[in-house]
Structures are given as C-alpha cells and as structure tokens.
Amino acid sequence: MSNIQKAFDKAKERGRKAFIPFVTAGDPSLEATEKFIYALEQAGSDIIEIGIPFSDPVADGPVIQQANVRALENGVTISRVFEMVAKIRKTTRVPIVFLLYANIVYYYGIQKFFDKCHEIGVDGIIIPDLPFEEKQEFNEFALTYGVDMISLVAPTSRDRIKEITKEAKGFLYCVTSMGVTGTRDTIQTDLKAMFETIDEFCTIPTALGFGISSAKQAEHLKDYADGVIVGSAIVKIIEKYGEEAEMPLIRFAEEMIQVL
Image 1 (cartoon, rainbow, N blue to C red):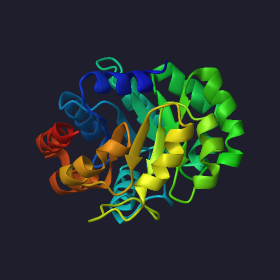
Image 2 (spheres, helix red, strand yellow):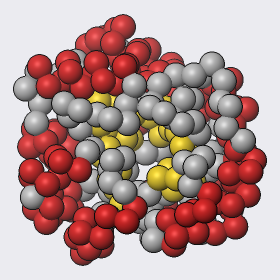
Image 3 (cartoon, rainbow, N blue to C red):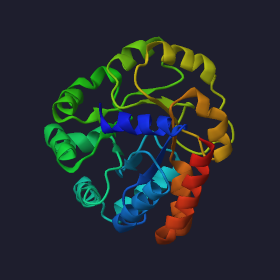
Image 4 (cartoon, rainbow, N blue to C red):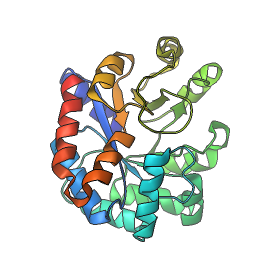
C-alpha cells in the first residue's frame, strides 16, 4: 500500500475526509514554500500537492498561472524543487504529490525524473496534459520506481472511467468542473451521476478538485469522495500575504479540516 493510500486510511480512521492543499513551488520563494508545507502539515493536512512552475500551465486558471509566473521569475527549476523536497524529507514524512506538465518530465528525462522522485520521497505525480492513452511511457518508470501516477477523470469521462480507474494509483483525481482551475461560487456538475460510475469501478480513494474554495463548499461536496483538493484559494492567500502567509494558511486549513 502506498503512502498516499495510507494517508486516506488515517483520515478515515479519524472520521473525516482527507484534505489535500496545493501550493506552487517558489511562490513567493522556495524558502517560503518550504515553510508553508510545514504549516499546512501542522494544521492537519493529509497530503501536500506541489505545483512545479511551467510557462504554459494549460490546466490552470489566472490565479495559479500568475503564481507560475512569479515562481519562474524567481528562477525556480525542477532541480531546485527537488532540492527543496529533499530538505523537507529530513523532517517530515507527509505524502507529497507533484503536479507538473509533460514537457518538464521530457526535458528532465523520464527515467531520471522518476528515479529522483523515488530517491527524495515524492509519493505521486499528476500530469494534467498527459492523455490516458499516452501515459505508458511514463507509467512504466512510475511502477519501477514506486511513484503513484495519479489519474484524472472529468465530467466528460463517463464512458472511459472504467478504463482509467483500472490502472489508477494513489487516488483518483475527480475534476468537479470543466475548464481550468480556479475558485467557483457554485459547482454545476452532476456529481451524483458522475460518482455512480466512479464508485462502480474505482477501488482506490477518490478526491475532488477544481473549483472548491471554501469550507462551506467542501462540507457540501465531501460525501461524494474520500478527499478534497484546494488550490486556487490557497494560492490567493499566498498572493495576499506573501512570505507571511503561514498563519493564514494554518487558519484556512484548520477551517477546511473541521468540516471534513
């Protein structure tokens, strides 16, 4: 059993859903990102998702796009993010998942990338621009090095959910809304119908992401899945408070976890 699945099991034992916050590495600095990860773990987060900055983050909305721009202007690279995670791993074992784009992995070298993830303790990766049909060249190395390749299903995936879930590892990332990431006032997707299909075939934990921005939304949606992912709302806090975002992040995470 992977560390990611263990984290979901621990949350379930505590009688709640898993909370998975997202931060962009290097926004506003890698030193700050490191502090934010410790703060989010201290608040009770079960898994931390780290976005690797990229010049064309096609799955992300304006909030996270701007965080990518700020991080890239700070000279953040995948190698520097690896160094940060290696440092984090000296003091914490909280499961860490990378969200990054396929070109970054290609540029770094696919086998070299997964070898490095294994070496420093990255538990899983999400590649939102990688079609399911093209994942094999990545997946063979993910399996070799024990890194969970996390699959995504969207509201339009219903006819393919069985196929996608068959090979899914870690957790199934269930996209609540079509389009890019970003806070939304309401979730319009028929999640009940979507999860009827998911629950029929999925044997690993599920987590809802894209658009969940408040404790009220999380409380309303939590029963569909085993966990909740929050990105843009957290990145907005970091944008507002910069290097001093630790306490606001702790308060936000604690408020989310309380309703889960």
